[in-house]
Amino acid sequence: MLRVLAHSWPLLTGVMLLMVGNGIQGTLLGIRGTSEGFSTYQLSVVMSAYFVGFLFGSRLAPVMIRRVGHVRVFAALGSLISAILVIYPVYPDWITWTLLRVLAGFCFSGIYITAESWINNTATNETRGQALSAYMIVQMLGIIASQALLNLPDSTGFALFIVPSVLVSLAFMPILLAATPAPDFDSARRLSFRALFRISPLGCVGMLLTGGVFSAMFGMASVWGSAAGLTVQQISIFVGALYVGGLVLQYPVGWLSDHIDRRVLIAAMSGTCALAMLAAAALPLPFAALIGVALLLGGITNPVYALLIAYTNDFLSREDMAGASAGLIFLNGFGAIFGPLITGWMMETAGPSGFFLFIGILYVALTGYAVWRMSRRASPSASGAFRGVAPGASSLAVDAVLANDPKRAA
Image (cartoon, rainbow, N blue to C red; front, side, top):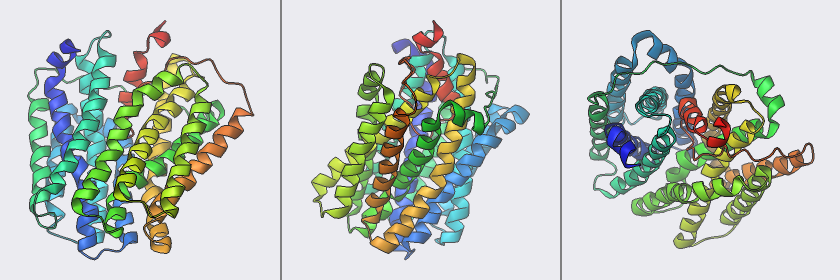
């Protein structure tokens, strides 16, 4: 690991700063939008817009990279992000914010693909798995650290929008100045969605549902907190707990999934989360209990995302894994577009409890479908293809992580 850090620290440092800058914007917009008088549904549209841009970016960024190269794409998209972050407080209008969020999602998608291909290129076959694991951990740590910035003064002014803009700008320095040549970019061979569904119905349906869960909990958590009367400090702790839970439970769940039927684990974890979310929707929980709910929600959602990718890959040859991962990630992004929209509508209808109710309903659906699929065919032998993968990682990072599984290489 020390050798990996010695070669990759400029890139990892840049990613850390980038995630601190990106991690604060979703939470901050929810708080600032509430103070500006935006309705819950208007904020849900703003939050969904990011995932629309992210989805298009995942398709168009590879074309841009092949046309003009990594460096130009990275610099152009990074400059646009810095500008977007300081425009938010200048034009506090929900339609303007929606358009800016589409651009932000597009830009971050392109930057992730660029950074991940760079990290992948700096590593050897022996260290690539460690490098990508370090990359995923740095992503999570950056987002967790970003929530602490919300406790700085001026959460309704300009300062907290300028800080992430500066951090994003600084993130490019170590990456662009790293003494590493820009890598060649090869896009994955894609599988049709029909073929992918035939291979793994549970993988496809599960990724659609978890896309809605992921975007609802990370896009609307701050909106829920404001509607529920939490302070800025409490909102930052709640959102941070979502990521801490995912960071802590990712690898224990992965180890367990290599020893039992992954579908059993998916169903058990989804059922547990469904019960917890429905309880949180029905009961007036104290803040300490809400932190426990956040830890559980993040601790289940992140591993379930990786479990669904690993389960689908259990049915694939090595040559088809990259294309399948790209398709699954696209389905996850498509589902993510609707998460904040439906959550916003449910919060308008049922109050703040609609936040937990929507996530609970999605996990009930995933539990039921996983149990039903277990009755339709036998489980494959566990292949060891589970790797800690954070939602939002590009198919390039997912494929690079999975490619270094020793059982797949054998």
